[in-house]
Image (cartoon, rainbow, N blue to C red):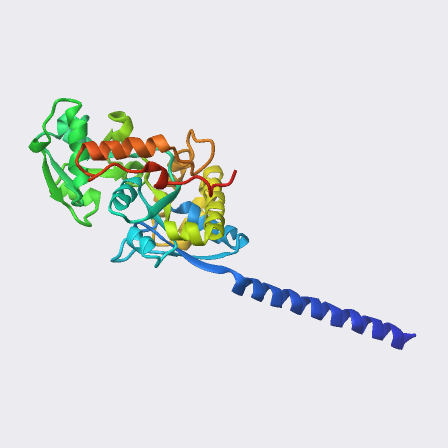
Length: 331
């Protein structure tokens, strides 16, 4: 009887070991069966990107069969890497995708990270720049893009002010707070990051938001992008990526503090106080008044493209329908 019991127990142990080994082998197999793709950021990691880090940390990408590398742009920008197929996905902007498509570069926006344009021209309160007419006689620090002067001019025209009375200089990689104390009066910032940092520093800013002066300047910035070939050849991969990213951003909307912790864990060099406060500020802005996170409207693409064309920034009009798609967003 004892021998029979021992035999039965041995069989269970063998079965248990077999199941354990099978589970381990299955897990290893699943790991190797994941499709490896990359998403390249537009800039250093910040709260515009939190949803991507959440999707990676919480396994949303893995659940969709993807092994996703989040990479920095380096010398080649995100648009270049995505357009050339060196990265499957990237963080981009409506303005750059519009310009790229006019030049025959087949980039496509697949989700709006933030529903409305939260950028604007910031200046220390001591500069007394409270509206576009106050740009007269001041120095603007930018990055050398023609769109900057056009946007400044567009806003100043609303108040019958002349953009030629603004000094425009390239501030390169100099940070906003250093630059405004040294050689510029105002710069173009995202409030969610630089504006929130000013709050933490106790430095009062005046903001001239683009959307306060023109509906056509309420465009999608930033966005997630891919190229036409990915959409044509690997639609399932695009669908999987967008589904997981959507879950990541939805988590950041509902749980900003926990989402901030994930970004801080992955990027320990970031100021945790800034990440936390920025995430709190941005949580309601990701989806805002859209029916779902990531949704884009054709009218928004047409409005901004027509503004760019009217301001001499485009050689021809944009076919807006081909510049973006909502078809990969979860229903």
